[in-house]
Image 1: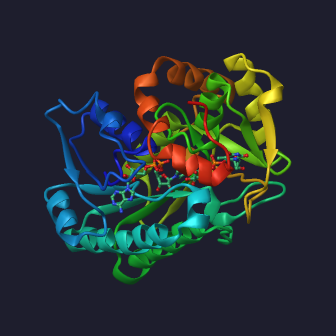
Image 2: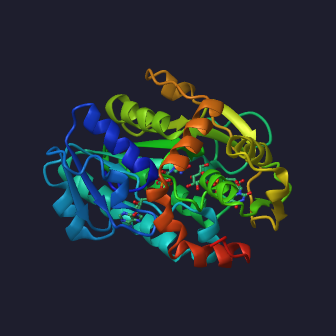
Image 3: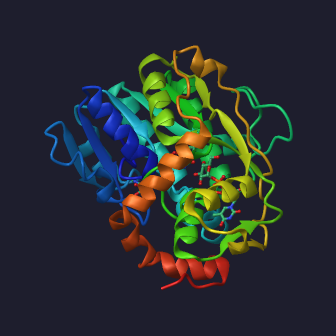
Length: 328
Ligand code: NAD
Ligand code: DAU
């Protein structure tokens, strides 16, 4: 499991161990990757951690030895960072995915690529299917789309056993506070401003992280070689509505909301049709209202997890991104 120390990867690691699998995590431990995310499984004898990058052939050869499948979560995942520093996005998504594909092909094992609804771009009405054209808008989504195309080519050209899972916006415990929901939760709890991009009416299709992990497990076991599976959440919601709900749950008031400059190339709405993955027996279990409440509770009860982030390099990132300091 590449990128298993991140937000979604660590949720998938927990699920795979609970389902009786042995797990090897390969992770570069970028600012987003944290051993803390795996603290509860580190002592499990069926779990192993290797510190290394997916673009490093030697590290990949070591990690892949004896495994039955590769699940690739490893990525740079924040759209705003891809606008300011696209370099790592190109490197990890293009070169890293290529190195993994070669290693899996050589051993004849399945490669599951974890991808995103953002590769399709924005949709005003209706939902994307797996056959919709790819029209990415940001360096993040463009490099993710490039990786998807490379993955598909390994099936068409070499007959490699590959599958792609495209998820909508995930949320839940252990998500880095650079992302909308944890950022707003922690800022609301600290009395910091809540920076809403543009008019706040961009719409996202929210998927609880454990539901996405379950969908990936379904696709890994039952998905057809060379196929793409969309995994959308059960509810869509505008950003301003998300922020208002968070304020209600955290007990803050609307005066904290501040409309700030829009993100360049900001996609208006994402929406995925998930019939194909449902036909494999998966469905989302957690509705947004319940998942958001669980998420707020988790951040409230786990300051040990986020305090080191909010007091470290993230403060500098925040100041650069928002032109503001976080409360001490
Ligand atoms: P994250 O940023 O929380 O974690 C990414 C992980 O990848 C980290 O542990 C990091 O250290 C590791 N990593 C980064 N570059 C690496 C490299 N070169 N080699 C090895 N490890 C590396 O990300 P996340 O939100 O958990 O997303 C995981 C995957 O799911 C990504 O591929 C992302 O594109 C996709 N995805 C995310 C969402 C979402 O809403 N967060 C939705 C759909 C799809
Ligand atoms: O759709 C799936 C994607 O969801 C994943 O592939 C990405 O890895 C993940 O980061 C996420 O991308 P988004 O750009 O949708 O997520 P983010 O949390 O950055 O922003 C969600 C929405 O909230 C988006 O419309 C921008 C807005 N936003 C975000 C931040 C950080 C704000 O209004 N203010 C903010 O400060």
